[in-house]
Length: 89
Image 1 (cartoon, rainbow, N blue to C red):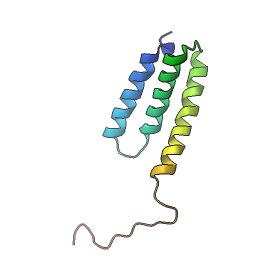
Image 2: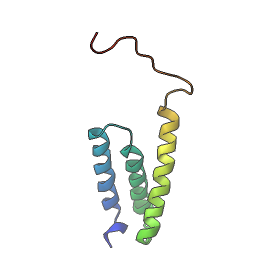
Image 3: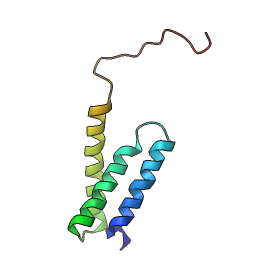
């Protein structure tokens, strides 16, 4: 099956990375990193896993990537953004 080929996951990572640039909201970057990690695992270790195991691995790696990104790029705890001027002023 084509899901066990490393470059398929690399293409998925590329598409998800492009979606992150096009769609604001910090949503797709964790998924792109997860797909890239699966691609690197398949490339380096040549794992022959089933689709369900690959999807579970992708989900776990994406979750870890998203949590790490949120930890490093989130606003400091308790910080609130105040706006002094309105766009119409």
